[in-house]
Length: 121
Image (cartoon, rainbow, N blue to C red; front, top):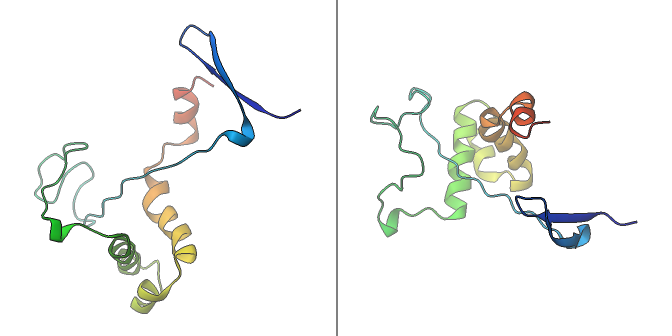
């Protein structure tokens, strides 16, 4: 048979059933690149970083997708993860993405034991 996803309330009562073919996941992430000289948990001024506090910016300073990707690619080059500055400008996103995940996302992820503890596995 086909897999199904069951949705239950906090008391364990079944609320709904969904075939797996109808379930979709979206993952969103928030990236922030700071100089390596800034200790984790602080902003560039040395003050504690406020989680989820919006940074003031003008509309002209808003980043578009191309600018964000280019900025992250340049940071990969600066960190020695790309061979040349040209790579940072010319590589396809499909080739850059795995490097970005390894460099920017995985180091921030909880380890397997933390996940097991969180989910009581």
